[in-house]
Image (cartoon, rainbow, N blue to C red; front, side, top):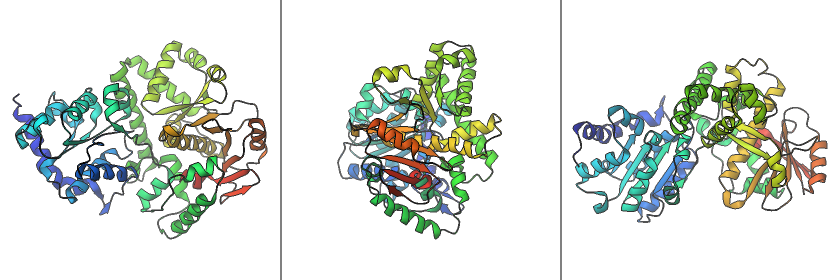
Length: 481
């Protein structure tokens, strides 16, 4: 196949110019961007590949805009360069850019790159090649391209990044070959690491031991080290927590100091999901995109987080099936997620679901945009905190599916906020909030569910303590685990 000059010139430009632009992409104000925790895992896969272990060579990184996916690719490029991989063996390109220059696919770029720069086809390749493919959702056949490349050669290491639309475009054949890491908004420890270069060694099972075993020793040691290190950071002050819970999930916002501009950026993240990802993949009409925005507004402004789909259907004057389709697609983009009531399958099917945003920052941006004037009071901050804790638990449990950990809400009267369960063990009740939090609700839940212990996450304690069968955890500590 002959490739036109436009495509060859584009590849030329990437090979020649990208290495020279790398510092601009890795630094701001003479400060190098810190690596997200996921970088260490990517680095280990690259090291395996460089040592002729070709098993982990098809990596997919979906995530919301602004969480640092492109920066991860730039850091991977830099790591390869520093490990003496020739620049003509590393190709970074963005499928969004590719769309602007012509109707080219990922497969077109790869075939042209190998033919014109390595005089090889995929099946005859005799050297290691690294493909760093950004905004892959702009090529609807990205997963098929990855599968074909994976099947035809062991000599190509691929990383695909893109919006969470990538989750909607997976097919079973590609999914079996790839390793997928969802890149979520930052937790508090990653926020502190990226913003202040704060590094603390954390045992891998620290959260499980705290939540399910009521073993607080490792968590207390971590908490003490965290406090000691924060004291020695001149730029850090107590206002950082408020900035984190409202804007801190997205490292792209670190260098935007104006909160209004941060709000606009987050609303743009939401808008791109609604108008680009959802519209293109599920063919939502322009009218239905308005319904999607209204659903998100309802979710942001309500205090209870539970949502009656029937009531929402009547309020928006659209069918129940359409509401279900909207919510299902929003979940698949990872903009929101749901939590079901604890109980039997029959009970869960009868109870409404609670919905939370992927980041408290997104909920806050929507709330500000649509004119809620209670965003400074303690109740509102408690709502954001509940969303944050739900997100942290959901992300932790989703990233360890083989451990069979589950997140529920408590539908009983005088309920606690969450119930967590591991395997078939008794559930652990969790209460979340600001201000005074007594133990009555948690104690009642422990008795009701036969739980070995319960957990209260609040600002009513400044350190982790365990009294009888209840663990009290400061929300800043929990958010950093």
